[in-house]
Length: 350
Image (cartoon, rainbow, N blue to C red; front, side):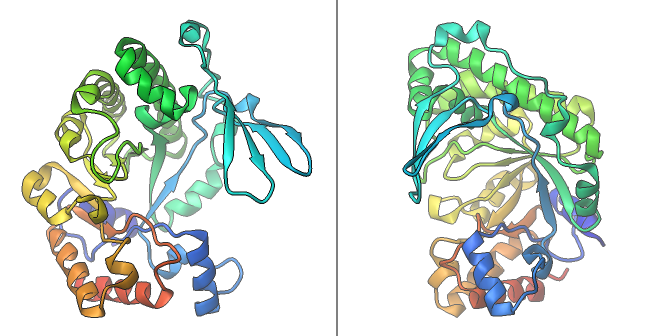
């Protein structure tokens, strides 16, 4: 069974030959892995750990032609990105200051024009994507209506908009939704990935709850998600996945109703327990993730770590799970991650 078949069976609630794995790795962890494994130049960490999933990311931003370096000297760098965000950063520092957003005045919404979703520069070369398809299950990644729309207004102002002017917020979010959906559909067409699917990345949760009330989601973002999912279903897309950090359990029912099939990363540190959620949703929602990268993977005693991995594995014994964590950072040693990988391979053979 190849990676595409394995992941497809798991997400369709059929038993794969073994538990599929999807993890992403911080650059610092990759550096540690190269040192510990003496990995040759060009070696792919995802190959070493037999990852089954890959994402391809088209450029969905509305203004590709606007991205440029505006000013740079010994102290400061001022640049504008493809979302129209102008920011200033200091050389050697890990922060930036937003100076301007694309839509500072909401009364100018009607004049806001996005560049064509068909521009070739938005899409990675087809041969590179075909090479990925040959070894992993590939999904197209786009953003979602909450996070991507915030780029046009700024994070704080966008939260204010949601409360002060829901009608404006819905109109702007739908405009962004139409843009990112057009890009996603074009990417699926170019790489013929309808039979794997689309994956929305839309971080809209803290460790305690969504960044807004369920009522706000229902009024503003549910219509966007429902429209977006309908477009992909009409195009023949088989699976629709959502990535969202944090705890969004109180809006999961609406997301499923809108058309979401699978949820990632199911963060234990945010109270998202994959075992409990499987009991609640049954076959209505598949999961990717479930492992605790905040407490258990970095430092729990090995017996506790093993018990945790085996508990999560049981969720997917009859399908419905691609195991993994939110991400693998430098606080997780290569030796401990190797131990996790060995457990997945030992107890995830079906």
